[in-house]
Image (cartoon, rainbow, N blue to C red):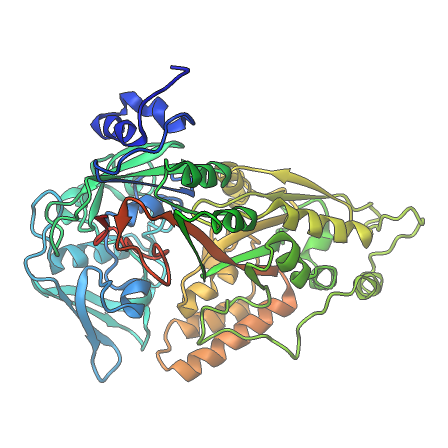
Length: 557
C-alpha cells in the first residue's frame, strides 16, 4: 500500500462501491487523473456525529444536500434556489401563510412528497413542546413554534401556517422537511437521542446521503426523483476534516474539486494556481469571546465573570481591527454587535457606545470595578482576593470556519498585559460542545471561550446568543436577562421591518453593554474550486452556505 497507484477517480469509484476502501480517504498518494467518472470530491471543516437533524446541530453538511427547507435563506435571496415550497404568500392579516408545494414531487425512495409531509414535520416538532423529550436539541427544533396557532395541509399541494401574531418565522425558519412515512413511528425520546437515521437517507434534495463514516467522509448519490430531473453527477464524496491543511493540499494536487474553510494564507497561495478559481464572500458567522456567566454549578474559576463591569473592561483590551489584519489578513470585518454586515437590515456600528482599544482604559476600568493588582506582581486579584488565572477554551465548531490560533493568541496576550493571565485549551468540536453544554449535562467549569456560531439573517437567529431558551447550545455564555428575552419575544411576533429593526437594535445594545460576549470579527468564507472537471459552480458564492446549490445543476466539463 505504500506506493498507491490508484488515480483519484479510481479511488472514488472504490469508495462509491463500498466502505471497504475507506483507507483511500486518508491517502496522500493518489494522483490527479481524468474526470470521466463524474464524481465530485469536496471538503470542509465539519464534525457531523449523526444524520438525525432532530438530534444535532453539527450535521448541516451533508444533510442539507438531501433535505429541503420549506423556504429558508437561499430561496429568499435567489429565485432559482427554491426549497420544498415552490411559492408562498401571506394574507392581509399577516397571520396566515400559504405555501404551494411542487406538484408531483417525490421523496428519493419514490414515495409522494406532499404538503402532508411538511405539516407532519412541523406538527411532529410542535407536539413535543413542553414534554420531557421536547425536540429542542438539534437543527430541527421547536424554537419559534410557540407562536404558531395552527399547521395543516389543505391538500397535497397546499400547506398553511397560521401564527398567533405577525411574524416572518414561517419563511425564515430553517427546519428540514422529513418524510412522514419514515419518521411517524420514531418516538420523541429516540428522535432527540438514539435514532441515528442511518443512510441511505430519504429526502427531496438532489443528492442523497448513502453512506456516512463519522470523522471521515459522507458518500452521496444522485436522487433519481429530484423535481428538476436527476442531477448530472455520478456522486459526491464529502471529506470531513478538522483542519484546512488537507483541503488546500487536495485542491493543489487535484484530489479535491472544491474546498471551503481555507485559511487566508492558503487562499492567497491557491489564487496563483491557473487551474483553480478562488472566491470569498461575507457570511453570517460570528467569532466571539464568551464569558461563563454561571453561578453555582458549572461556574468558572472566579465570580468576576458574572460581573458586567469586569466583562466590559475586558472589551477595551481587545483590538478587533488588529485581529482582522493580522489573524485573518483582511478577510473579515471587525466585530461589533450581534448583527453581521451581511444582515443588511439589522447591522449597526453602534458608534455611540462602541468600545475602543485602549489597554490603559481597560486597566482603569478594572481598578474602578475592584479588580486590582494589590501586591504589584503584575497579576490582578478578584474581589475575594484570589489571583486571576483564567482558562480559555477554543476550537472550531462543526460547520463553522476555522478560527486562526493567531486570533486566540492575540486575545490571550492582551489580557496578560492588563494583569489577567490566561491558559489556552484547544478542543475538537465534540469536546468543545461537551464543555459548553449545560451543567446538568456535565458542561461548564470553564472561564472564557473563543468560538463561533453561524446565524441566519433572520432577527430571531441574530439574537439567539442571548436567548434563555438556548442556554448551553446557542447561548454558550449561559447569560440570562429578562429584558433581552422580552425583546426577543417581541421580535418573534413582529412582522413590520422598521419595528423589528428597532427591537433588534435595542437588544444588540443591551447585550453589548452587559458584555457576556465580545464580538471579535465576522470572517469571510474563503473557498476554491478546480476548473478541470465540472462546471455550473456559482459566481458570487461558488457553493452556497445555505443550501445544496450548485449540486442540483453541476455538470461535467
